[in-house]
Length: 55
Image 1 (cartoon, rainbow, N blue to C red):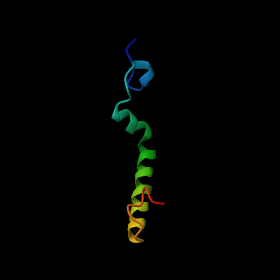
Image 2: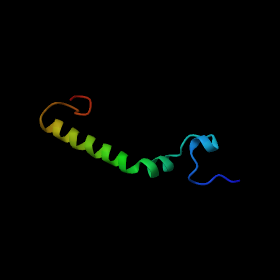
Image 3: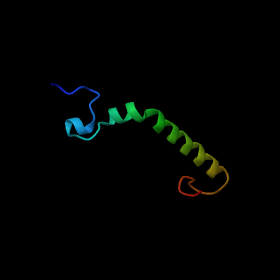
Image 4: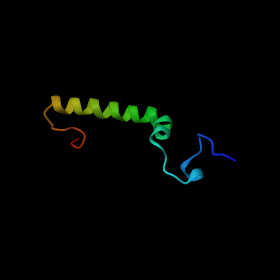
């Protein structure tokens, strides 16, 4: 039986490829990046520094 493209890392014994992570986690990653970018811009505008590490 040949492994399917949707097989997990446990099935084929290798780490998840970047493409598989993006396919499965893409929306969540985009949301996190968007929130971080907006938060950084707000923090810069208010003079708090980098923003991501400083609440």
